[in-house]
Image 1 (cartoon, rainbow over the protein chains, first blue to last red):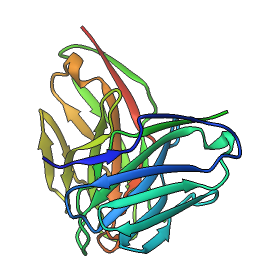
Image 2: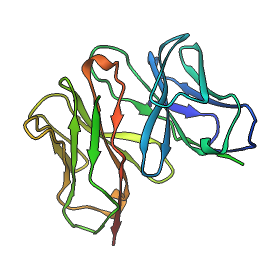
Image 3: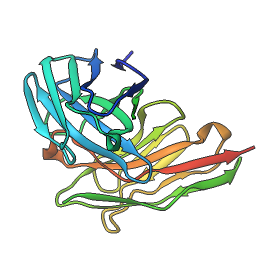
Image 4: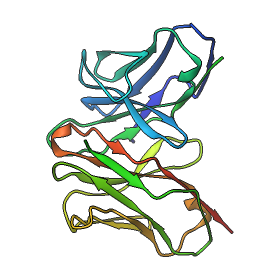
Length: 114
Length: 113
């Protein structure tokens, strides 16, 4: 069964802390994505990776960085968490190619920054 | 750039009612179109998709037809159930965009018994 897992379902951090969100997929997908989901705004792409060590900025990369050292793992890093980064974070993965492949999503991490 | 517009929500229906959720899009090329569903406490999962004009995607009693002339991909179901209560997202992906998705804002559907 296809699986994308995220390291935490709920996380509470303080302003200024460095935060790591981990995502692992077991489908040998080349592409991995990080989104944030906010009410009334839908899903917005933060970063995208199409291969190990490769990354591309999405629509809202400010305040975030990513790391992809292994094909199955994609990490989202908040260098210095701020209250406006309180949100639901969703990881997804897909095959890579010219066609439009389905993205598979993890269950999400609800991050609260106080 | 690409964009997806969904009708405003939330939507509340009685069980067995007919459902239509409107979705229109703007894209430069010939995108693939998707409906994703998010049940409470879960991530998104693909509900259905269509990859070219006049294609109809269907799954779990839901249907949507890719209408190029009206740039629309409206979601329909003839008889909703309480278990259909969820958030529904319309999305598109350009063929050359490496499967990156552009999402609409989502709409919450509540079905009451």
